[in-house]
Amino acid sequence: MKKVVVMTTGGTIAMKYDPVTQGLIPAVSGDDLIEAVPALREIAEVEVVEFSNVPSGHITPQMMFDLAKMADRYAEREDVSGIVVTHGTDTLEETAYMLGLAVKKNKPVCLTGAMRGASETGPDGPANILAAVMVAASDEALGKGALLIFNDEIHAAAEVTKTHTTSCATFHSPGWGPIGHIYFDRVVFRRQPLNLEKICPAVLAEEVCLLKTYAGMDAYLFKMLAEKPVQGLIVEALGCGNVPPAVKEGIEYVRSRDIPVVLASRVHTGRVVPAYSYFGSARSMEASKIILGGELTGQKARIKLMLALGLTKDNEELRRFFDN
Image (cartoon, rainbow, N blue to C red; front, side, top):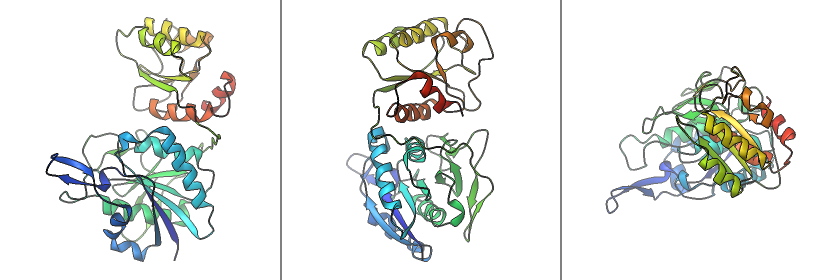
């Protein structure tokens, strides 16, 4: 029987209702999570490692980076076939993307969580854990990068995002869809994620910020971040990479301080492309050597830039990390 290491970090999946605070709080250990899914014994030998027990909003990029290193250590063991990470859903897609980039080993890394606490009616955590272990123990999962397993669907870490605040069907891959499904008797993959890559620095650049563009936005926040100074900046632009005139000026001010700026889009689907040439378009900012973020959401572009800055500060070398 294959062995799967389950690394627990906390989140709703490890919470119960507290009548004093009248809300969900961390209350379930990693071992408790596994004991709630007796069917796991028929799928794989499970080894539980508790990394943390915190809400996912408390997870920092450095913790994600440390989690990737821990996953690598367990993946190095010959007796381990795959890794499962249980995690809160609010930042789950960011941790999944971090692990997809920063885990060096090629063994399956499957992340999951829950939208309902362990004490709620019909908790989804046990079914999601079972599905994630099934995928981690599957030979077909090898070489597909980090995967997010939720609601019996398998999503590529680079494509998936949370789309609903409370629904159990919250995770989707806009424009692409899941790469596979989990059935009661087997795991079925229907496509291979492309452009899988690794960025494995020794350290993480933590001072990377994200700003979302809105109508009428001015340059104030850009100037404040440049004066701080931050190590890098992600800008979620309008449409395919366009910003208000004052934001263009703010971006150019940041670039004048030799701080890398990556242009993403606040739109769910599609690439950032220099389709327009008016003042504030992506093309109009080419002279400042901004980096186009492709299809990445702002939060994922931030994770990638934090890792890439751990390897180089050269703007043109950083651009190559986003070219694919």
